Length: 133
Length: 274
Image 1: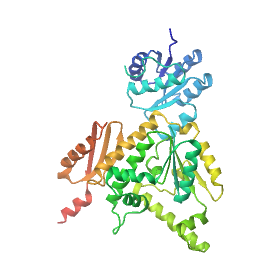
Image 2: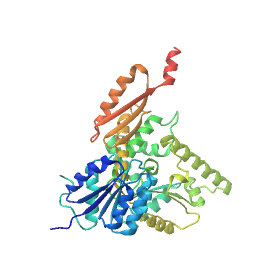
Image 3: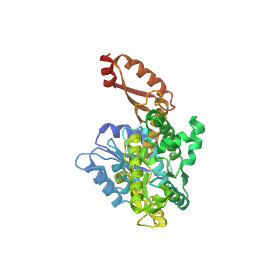
């Protein structure tokens, strides 16, 4: 059996994780959802994820810090940033710091699935149930 | 996918640099040659399209409405080309209408004053003072043009990612610097920047449809939603909104058109004085 792509989703709005988890699981990924960035970072320290999807604007710890911590621990992990405050400067900062993709909210689960499929392919583990289901 | 948009005070110099970068990186090169295609598709003559890129509207020349329509057609086509692949673009004012798109590297090339002076006054042997004045007038004219056409100052360095003066460095060094900068991670295309570009294309298409009838319309697109703001009198608001919704709603991919009609205070005042 092929190795599953392991995804961590971090967003302080509970509805985001709740909506995205089943959509990403249907792609054949193993998904862990967090609302608290501190708990997410603790988990990232314990386990290596293939893909991390993180909101940018969160209380206490922002997504850019999460990105830096992830890349420091595991440079191969693809980090997808999501934000409701998308601006060119922020998008460029995230890419410069190693983000794989940057998506503006609101987005559809389909849009995230496409970004995850692309990231999985770049990791050399293309997903069977990528975007059409 | 990366795009390089070059703006220069000298068309010839901008073209030379654009062609060299495109050759070096293997990118497609786009310049005013594309006006032929835009002309064929829109029915607007190539001369008029070129004039819209160069001249400021005036009472005796091109009207502001015509310029807005012509530029909207150019914008729509150029952004459509940007969505296809890696492109180097020069001479089509792209730096002004994709300003907020992060994977477009916007470069301003300032040519050597002597070369520019000769280009602006071919065959004339101008003194240093006269040449300086001529260059200053040309810069002011471009500033007026860009402010009128896009409410942006083309000569303002803060509108660019990179400004290169050919008075200080050689053309080949400039080409090398631009080609290197394009490799920076921050200029990589991402879902958000591609969406911004697609939204700009949709907005430009809406402008090509609306401007002939509503030249003061301000148009923004966000995915399948298009927002239009225009002026109107109280009694015509509803009718105007319906017409705009019908016109813009025909664009493929658009499923919601939001129209805001703000009071046309000047017309209202004029009518009340009758």
